[in-house]
View 1 (cartoon, rainbow over the protein chains, first blue to last red):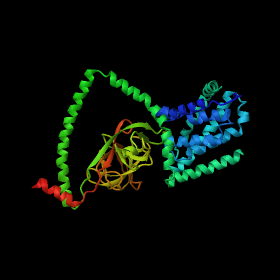
View 2: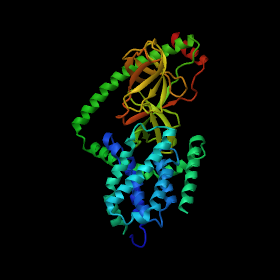
View 3: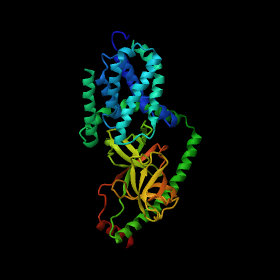
View 4: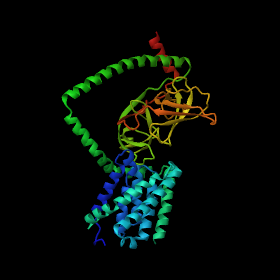
Length: 156
Length: 282
């Protein structure tokens, strides 16, 4: 699907932007709706550039994510690695899906990522009080078509 | 292959997590990683900075004059109050000397700016623009002009992370300003609500009471205002009174905050005070 070589500039740029959007201060509803930008961007790279971006790359990105938002080291890293694992096991099929069907999978995968994160984080500090922590997975899935389109354009 | 890798990475994450929680080996690694992330922090602040700059060059002369006048007025009022405070402090120290207690420590402060908040809506944490290069240390108390805000939990060379008193993981020892009853004020996870826990029904605490830090526990300096009691419920079915308070600090509004440093030579010994006491008294 993707052309010959991956554009590392676009890769780095998209991650930088995702990191900025992750920590930009927001209030009220916007903070609850905020998509999991880093996870979403990494879904794209893991699916379409699985030669260069695998579990290890996802793990490293997660590690930096941990440092960026100050969570216990390894939390985001572990859940990002799980996300990459899930994507890679079904990437052959996923690539052939229409974009909306991909969105559903993106919701599930990011949802699992969030659940693992919230579960372990619950042991350490803040147990979740409701299922509201899954809302970012919904907004991420809704943004997936737009993100895939944009990154496709830039990457190829 | 994939299965092996995810297993390896899982174990690695677990090990790193435990090491991070229980040991401090990884602090230098975290610090160098956070330096790599400074550009991200910086670009997130950029719009705000441009806005501030734009505001500062377009502000009109008349509004500046007005602002200046009101600030001067405020300064005058505060100076008068400070004069009074100085004499009161001296008096309190003399009295404490009579009671064989150590003197109040003079604290110095450093002004910092809030440059970010934790994006996780379940946590109440902010980032400030001062770090270990400015002498900020872990556990340092943070104030705004109204009251106590929280404490530093992680330090990098150029920034620090502050846990606010409203976070559900935070607790602070306080006393009631009116009568000195002690208690522990715990965050509830809601910004404008703190809970005073394990207070017997018979303790004299009323709505409107000011709660100040008690200095017990050694982390927060004594005597800074923390919260005002908002509701007291006595339910015969519960072992303790249910007391809620509202933080005095503007946890969601303050931009400029103060970091408190204890002066070197804290807890001045008694002889010093006695000397001090004799000077003005004679």
